[in-house]
Length: 84
Ligand SMILES: [Zn+2]
Image 1 (cartoon, rainbow, N blue to C red):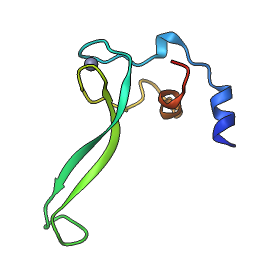
Image 2 (cartoon, rainbow, N blue to C red):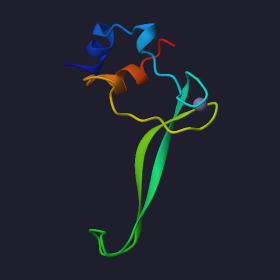
Image 3 (cartoon, helix red, strand yellow):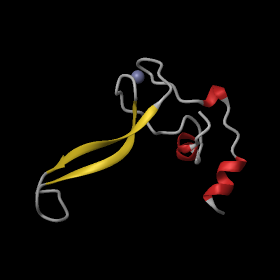
Image 4 (cartoon, helix red, strand yellow):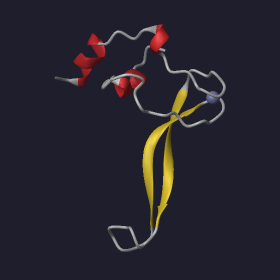
């Protein structure tokens, strides 16, 4: 199944649109969370920084919890959709 086909088959409902829990903003930008990893737990044996990709509110910068509201395996596709 191609990603193009997934886009075409998803119905994006206004009530399902994510809203920032802090300011009510509805636009988000890609943002990484950075974690320091100590040498003790690092698989490389050296201290490192790990970047976890995510999204942040474009207005207030609050990071979005990407846990689906229900079981919505296509939530990332919905966020990626260009029908704003
Ligand atoms: Zn916000």
